[in-house]
Length: 119
Image (cartoon, rainbow, N blue to C red; front, side, top):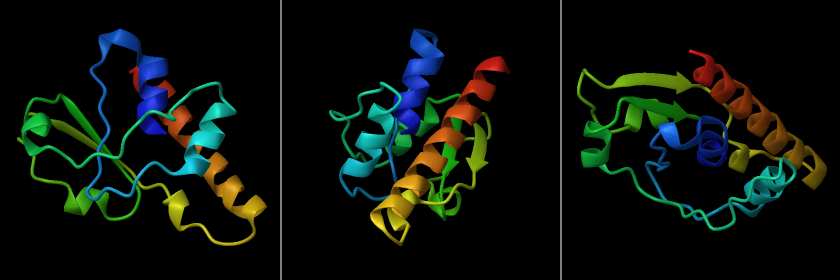
């Protein structure tokens, strides 16, 4: 979701890539809630973090759980932000409740990326 919003909101001035500490595949619920915002992430792939790519980055944003602590070491020149959002893939409850968690996280990611653009 973050990659989809970042590309949409930040545009071509930013080089945007998304990766995780593990690959789990693309979550169909994430695809669905992003489609509600007219952003198609259905062709995105779950990728592992590339430590070399991190070294050439200006900003690394970690999301959810222990990603910040498990992210590979980056040079001190790389700005790091951690957005401690719940992992919607771990949400439990009815389908309606789980989808609401996905929407809440989606909306918070969108808000934070809009804020990044202003800075």
